[in-house]
Image (cartoon, rainbow, N blue to C red; front, side):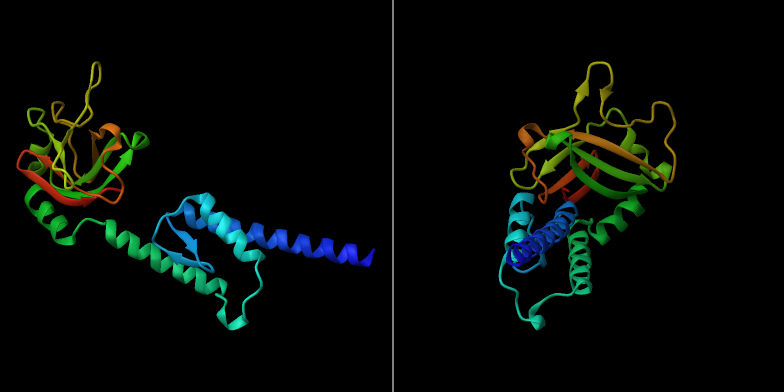
Length: 211
């Protein structure tokens, strides 16, 4: 009876360890990061199932020497550093942001995949209305130019809604406000991490990283 109780206690402790490690791994996956090889944070995205299986396997293997384990604080620090590196890679170039702000009165925020990857959502903030007005001219047709194959992806048109972009027909463009344009992405051609350029007449926001 004592042996069965001890085995049961060991199994319960092991299940608890697996659950905790799997939950921690799931948290990493939600922020776009995965655990690999003894809980080290890495920038390579991996399927949640793979990460959880690896974490569970790690929790059930023979314990490593104490000096080889990562403390909770070390894991948190590794995650924070990895997140900083990820954000640094996807942020628009600082010189480009400055140049567009000075010439066009806008700050580029991001370009993201949306609608299950079938569209691209371009976001920017107006800081100078007069300089930014050409971006809202309905006669100008914006498009995304892909770096990989130099394919043009235009703004879709809906029968009743019209183009998925703002215009200044109502004279309602305001400073310190964020605006968006949606571009088509047929067959999810553009993937996260690729470089694209947003072209609106003479306006060119080049080498943006798709998120």
